[in-house]
Image 1 (cartoon, rainbow, N blue to C red):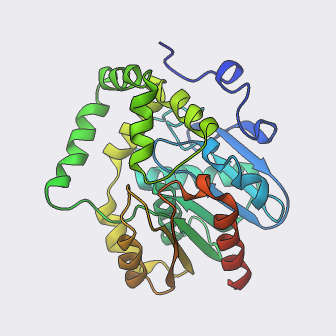
Image 2: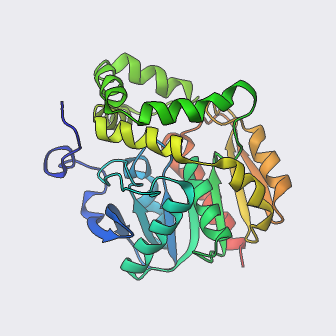
Length: 290
């Protein structure tokens, strides 16, 4: 079983491959896609995904922006860093270093799920100064009740490569991957599903996702959200089975410049299901932002 994804093999048909490059910054050897011209836009995927999830979004947004879309640390073709590089503040700092290495100023940000939390952390910590942030089914709210065991369990699983290897071996069964994708409330096409299967068959990718979940402290972000002083659009798919759409209302009530837009009939992977609808919401928001 392959430990890490190999660019020459696994990336040979990668979506938007011509935009890909590898850049050393902030202690990470990033796989990042850079495309287009205009205002800088940082595009961040969620836990367990990669740049592939922007397959149809990146070409649309790059018509009006300089888009920077990295594989997050430990995901896809970006290896997992040491130290606190998998924590939320650590990822925020390393992404700021990547933008510096690329000489791109992130005037706008779009984040899916955990990616929205990272963008908010970067703005709160003054690592970027965006004119606005779009959260696509953003994951901001800490686990409560019995789900608080999730982080300790993730820490335990992330401490050994055995768990990642077991998970990756189970992903050889397309039915297992399909069950996970179906649980998001989204219906994606066969190509997107095949790319997720490719990712989770890599123990290194699975280990990166586990390490990210084990290292994050959403309680601190939730506490600091009132300090977020940039316009925040919370796009919520009505069928999201991963992050409850009601969480968007809770976040909007906690920040000064937040508002919610619901997309009916779409799930957690709304941007993969309907890139046109999602990009229309993004474009409308940024056209109204200062």
